[in-house]
Image 1 (cartoon, helix red, strand yellow):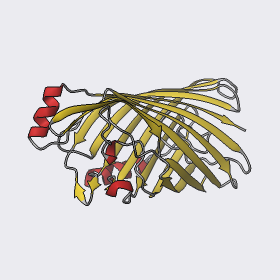
Image 2 (cartoon, rainbow, N blue to C red; image 1 turned 60 degrees about the vertical axis):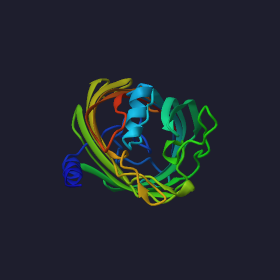
Image 3 (cartoon, one colour; image 1 turned 45 degrees about the vertical axis):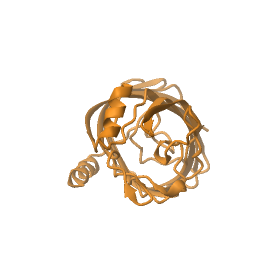
Length: 309
């Protein structure tokens, strides 16, 4: 936690605007903007996330199981999401986002034999989030608070018909409060933004409690084209960390869960006019401190588009 605390202090010591155009504020990236929508305006966000993961042979999975580890393999995971933000006042924006999860090539050991789920598909847990702007000039600062809502599916089955473990379901069944902050400062062509979200987890369905999580991100963005006019083109470099504590089922910690992943993202953002934004980021993990035995992430692609009206 000392490393994580230092990481957050570093983030909050910088300032800037990342994608500072939208109420949800993380279109095509992980850094949330502190900027709120103007009063009575809306922003519609559509996002896509693709994560390529490490795969294992059946022998590798069986060997891990024989040694008491809960190792599983995954070819890739995808998430489609749609979100709507509303400016309650010039200082307060609220948003809600609903994801749709897809897991492909999921393999695990059950009863001494390898089982798999070729395609796990289901609605994920929705997130409602409020953002309140505290400062606007020269440094932008906002606080965030919300909740993860248990809308996700928790009854997905493996190919054999066996129910998947709770931690491998699209939803958790838990109501999880979320707290966070975002800071920003904009220069002429370069902006630097930072944000952090802390998810306080609770026990959900099947007596399962996911580990508490902190998602922190720092982004530097440079405007290449369109100073004072449209279209505007930006390039960005983003450093992010996801820290998760170990999951629990019936009060027992899964020693092969949780840990820290630090990623470096390379992104681009196009603001075609005053309404439409399209952005994408490719993130490569530079550090993966995972507990026990787990599959590692190879890379992650984030794509998003937002329309303000």
